[in-house]
Amino acid sequence: MSNFTIALLASVAYFVTFGGNWLFGQCMLERPIIVATVTGALFGDITTGIKLGATLEAIYMGAVNIGGATSAEPVSATVMATTFAITSGLDTEAAIAFAVPVGLIFNSLMMLWIMLSNIFQGWYTKVCETGNTKGFTTLILTSWFVQYAIRTVVIFLCVYFGAEAVQTFMTNLPVGVMKGLGAASGLLGAVGMAVLTRMLINTENVGFLFIGFIGARYFNLPAIVVAIIAVVVALTIAFNDKQLMDLKNAMKKGTVGVALSEEEDFLNG
Image (cartoon, rainbow, N blue to C red; front, side, top):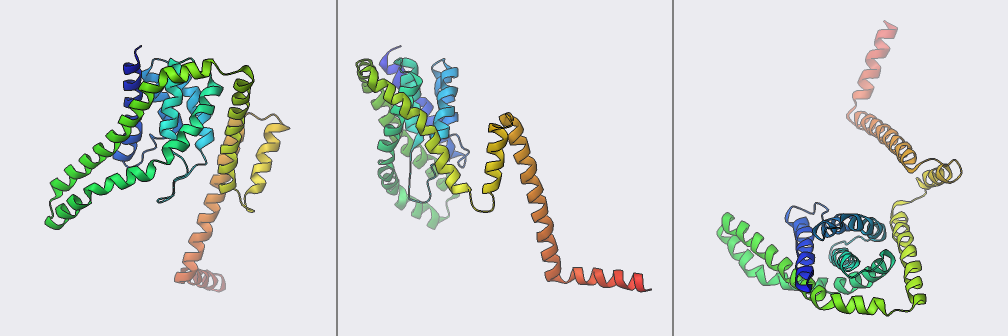
């Protein structure tokens, strides 16, 4: 497979997942598990794509972009890591270790993409002032395509000129460095889960974490069993909270007091 074909397929995977995600209202096509699977399917090795995607998903699961603050750009990292793993012979550990710095580099370019989108500001103002709904729709699609087409060109160039360089570089790395990359990639998943756990855990639910850990570690419960127990507990808490909320709203409206008075009248009568 030529470098041009490799770069083209990687670009298609990037554009479809990243661009498609925002075209349809952030439908989570940009998640590493989806991106890597699509990339692997295009290269004819969906198994490698799923494996890499699952590992990278664990790493980037806790990465959340809020407003203009961007913590990571996992799409480019996932596409390039999966592409090089399949076409250049990188093993899983090396591909994962390669993905993280790529994600950081492309994350630094996010503000550049946002600045480029401002070139459409004048056109948006014009179509809004004139009430041109068809023109507004056309402008949305045009600006979307231009923004993600520019990003896709960057991915194409990186893969096109970097495939052989990456392959040569990784082939010439000492064995000790490769083992270090493997160890680092093993830690990255734990770091990603730790970041996510830090956001989710508080004093009210930390006990459930230890219950799940004890069940899995000391009672050898399968992960699916722990997940089912967690769902049952979550639904129970949710239903109880809903009943308390309904009771609270009823007390505010005075309907509870009325019901109690009628019951007392019945018992007294």
